[in-house]
Image (tube, rainbow, N blue to C red; front, side, top):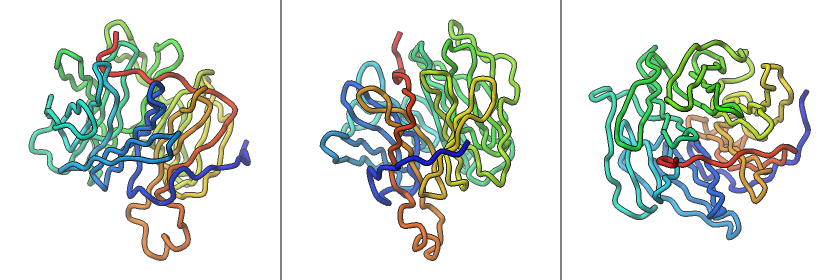
Length: 294
């Protein structure tokens, strides 16, 4: 079912490649990255202003840490930032020498582990992976063989990890052991027709619905836990990239987008490309887990 819904413009065309929105409930701020601008962006929703921190490489993600500050994937390095302005500390590096690879999407599970994927910028098949980072510094390639490791989130009881390797045109469901932080059997959950867009960022709501941004498809979708399509919402940008629930009651759905690689003619036709959008889909999201929480 395609839904008609008012879309609010939070920013207009500010991002080259907006990605990875994360709601910080205590601060009432939205954290996101602008990958091509090599920046972390922190937006204060109430004050309607934002600050940017730029880096020396593309920033695939930033997530909050329980001790304060953030953990960011910069290039192929995992870096800790005590604050937006503070000097970053390198915690780990992966895929040494694989210069065409970089970190992409990431999320923390309910035990404070960070699951972060890499991608091949030239789409070399199987060159990336999904990594598990523990608070004690241990790094494991939990799921090798990815090409564009992308959106991920867990079902309501954390027995299933929903995971996107975009080039497969699927959302997969992977059995998950929360206590041990282990992945099990993997199977297709939903197949996405290439004509409908590339599956990108993903979020699970408080009812177990699975939301996906369709890059190139100008829409976000909600699937039920049994894989049935529940709703599709058209958005005024061709390339929505990711999404996250926020707001006081977690009933606002923030959607990032991209204008990276659009031609001048395309940008003229699509002036809202690169905007941050806000929807009110009638369902709430869930609280953000932080790195290192127990």
